[in-house]
Length: 174
Image (cartoon, rainbow, N blue to C red; front, side, top):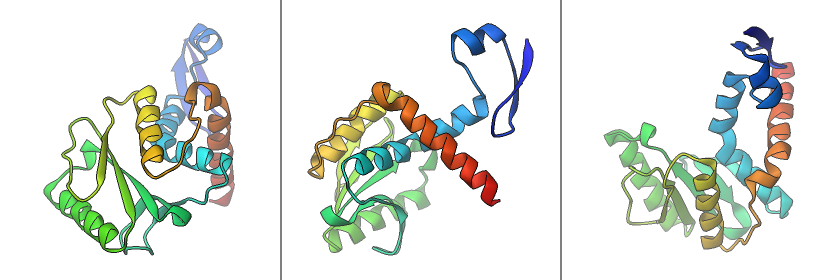
């Protein structure tokens, strides 16, 4: 076992073989990447297809929308079970209502155990795997009228590189 240090300054202990042969890196960076992955995928594939997307847009309805596509008057929201609470569910229902009132097509990607709502289209992500996320995003984009070639296995290195560059830029701005 040896100590490693990532380009972001995180340190971790791991086997040389795991790093060299399995490509395992910083566990903290990997968790951050996994957390940001749904938004990175939306940004990457929307950009590849010359679509404008706004993340965490709240000017449209007064509450943040995870991903808003102005030209399509559509939004994609991720509803995660760890965010579920009675108060959180009320906010989600308000988002549904405000999107419907503003004629925004809302697609909600739900965790396996998250309850569905009535005023939007819900897609259930069967598990937390990258493959399930990819399938859920393909379905969500299809519903809002965008037909994309989403292939995380093919594009993972590019997307991860963009994530690392974004982290470096953020680090220099602090």
